[in-house]
Image (tube, rainbow, N blue to C red; front, side, top):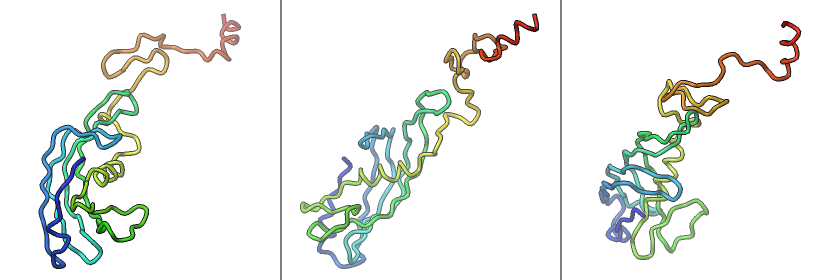
Length: 162
């Protein structure tokens, strides 16, 4: 949980701001691992609650779709969301300021991180992947498989050639 006390803004005048600084080490955002979170976020008192705006740099721990090796993927999470005050009726997907005056940024950071993950994350653009036959990681070692493969359905035709 990445929680901040914003109780000073709950009864403040509209437009009042509070800067929230993040500088954490390795975190787990539910089902997503991040190496660090660094940045500053502004909490601004608005009519409907608190507007959270800012940018947070991080590195996500992902798995390459070609070689299946874990790697760190750098991202900058752009945040802009309204946290509604606790007694207000909230929509299903809205974020809330707790009755104790604290907000938890972890769900918002997690959501933004998932949006920033590419469809097919690669450890590097020229990743060679795995051999489809022996499973060797072609980035680390050459494949020991037979170079010329004959489709088993066409193997009887090879006998005719001999």
